[in-house]
Length: 596
Image (cartoon, rainbow, N blue to C red):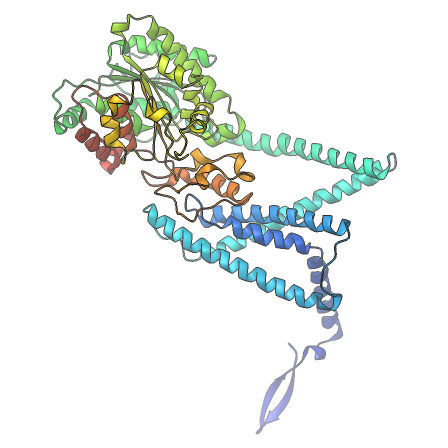
């Protein structure tokens, strides 16, 4: 700022110069800048800004899982943009029917300042609520405290993203108006606008799908194809003939893919199985567990890959084992190590687990772009195994079970038309973290007995299928429920905080039963439903659920012990043995055994 000079007691001092004293050129630039900012700000719809603030605040409300500032900023920005669009549409509609502000024109400035103050108060309040529920939820889930600068990061990212989306929408609007003017030379105004909207929508879709989506898909496929060729550190080619990828195997080590190599090289060995059997007081001869697997390139199609799995079962004499588990993998070909280890510890290795790869892309990519392949793969594998199993004399067959987690649960249930079909063709099933769009699960949950909760349904009094929150609270009834829980038995493992289970597009406009009923043990009681915002909250929960500690979110570890002990208990098995196995799987050393 320019200053003028003066003297005080012989000293020369600088006195501040007012803006009016600035050079005319500087005053002109400042005035033009203020005018430009004012014009830019005036282009925003007041009703739209109200909608943006409302949905921004709603997006920061409590949800199933804590999340990072990045995720929270993204969801808040997207919701703010949607809120702006909805508010602007309402404001436009109001003006079209002649509605005007109820205050006089000379009060508009005051009203704007009051609204701005209210908006700031709402934003600050929403950030305070966000910090509070994040901290309480992290305590509930045994997670660390949130970062201290979280509110600033959330606001900065949300504002930037919302502004970017609004400006992008304005750009499309300008393009639409330009197209409408061109078409208007040939058509009346209304048809011209409709044609312009259709042309811009189609062109935008083709551009995004053909350029952006195709580019992202190519990058993902290239990246994960390269990763599939790699081997996890510590995974070595097995030497035991009971494993696929061994020198005796029909499937080479390199053909199994990264997750297949991890599966066949992991799990408890005979020494560990013997130690566990002694620890639970079961006297038995342990065996090397059979793990067979076929990689994506093993056959020309899903049926060909499944045929290779059956050939491996024949080669390893898996039909002579006590139990045979057909597991459908997740998108990358991953088999849950805790679920596999639970079966093998339960039976002292007198078991066989069969799995195959149908993709090398992450489950979320498969979920978005290809929901047909997982159930097709689950059906191909189970049908192939079941056909070979059915050829054996009934008294010489192993007990046959189905299993899967997450997208693998969705795929595994694709082999069955109904619960009756599961009971007719298997000796039981264990499915964990089942996505809410799985038809069999959704039908059974919807048909639950009146008065039972959506997060913990009861169907036909628990005669065939039972759901477990963690199954720890239900372990006694599971173990002692033989009189009412018939065989074969089916168990669904699901946590109240698992966004994979509870995500649905219906959340956009409909309140689900699980948000009408009492919340689960690891979900804050103040988690509520809000149109649009809750959908995006749970969408983020869907992606971060796998980062939860054991026993929460999409992380199932010790729960496999309770489920398999209820569905397929070996002779001499006790509730105390189940508790010991649960603890072994939950402990770090138990997890390392399962994932080795």
